[in-house]
Length: 123
Image 1 (tube, helix red, strand yellow):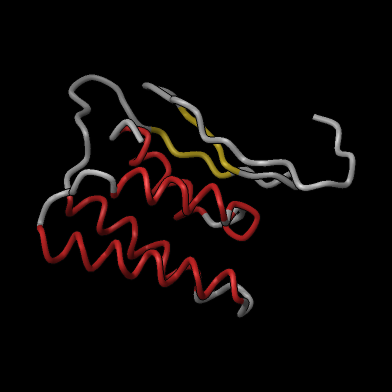
Image 2 (tube, rainbow, N blue to C red):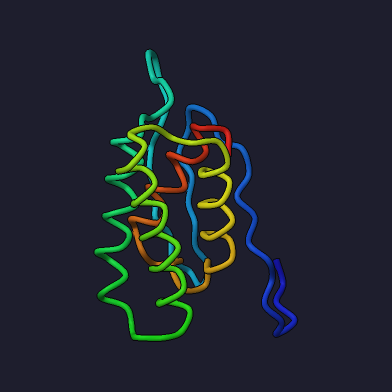
């Protein structure tokens, strides 16, 4: 896609039994999900992915965007820990957060892993 100098929105589409990447600026992170017997992830797996992304965010330069994304991830982690299950709306909220802050996390492999889990949840 040719760049006109304006930021283009990032969309994460449907991915089934294949590899996918999130990234721009010639950055690619690939995660493989699917295959025989692959089911939707549970709350523990989603919580682990959220925690890993939060841990990797610490390595990024401090910014308002990083703080806002970390707060969103902290709230999601709290909900997962408290409920012990994936409540309706949480995967979509996390997907929206990844899309909103895609330029911030495009080089973070944990963001790609979380996006893969959300895709397998249908978000």
